[in-house]
Amino acid sequence: METKISTGTAVMDWLLEGGYDKSVITTVYGPAGSGKSNLCLLCIANSVKGHKIIFIDTEGNFSLTRFKQVCPDYKKVLERIIFLKPTNFREQRLAIAKLKALIKQDIGIIFVDSISALYRAALQGENNRGINNAMAAQVYDLLEIARKKDISIIMTAQVYADFEEKGKVNLVGGAIVRNMSKCLIELQSAGPNRLAIVRKHRSIEEGKSIMFRIVDEGIIEVDK
Image (cartoon, rainbow, N blue to C red):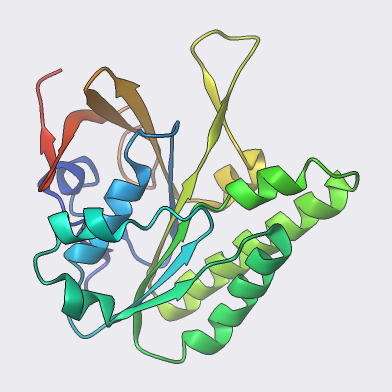
């Protein structure tokens, strides 16, 4: 029985020694433009035929123009994607709650791009404790689905600067996302290139990394 699914790229398959683990949450985090959504699109473009895909798009990041570049057979693949597009944190909660009905179908993978944008916006209100509890419940629901259905759930997350340690970034969603994700991948921008670093994994050494560049066809490895 396969325990991984391909990331859709040789670069990330090498980093993760075969691909994304099934039955767990993988979170890819980094600054805007670091390649988070690109990795989602590449995985979708090369996903197993026959399975449906759920894509929860909280930021409007799914670019059809970009998807056409990385997926020559994009029309057929689009027919297999179920899109959910929440525009606020309450709608995100409802979208994740809806998954329990949707997974009765043959779902191969679930993407949440991103888990943190609407949560971050909701934190501007007064009841942050309630927002944090709601966020924890949403991520727990996703983890439960991953385990029960033995599928991969890929989340992206935003970051913010650490004012005490220059150059360090913190994951939006903090301990909630970090603790419930079995795999954490940090993306960093380095001029025209991107650096992917394993920050947490069940079987891969923390700190393993690879440099890549985003090109029209997808991503390619470059020398560090």
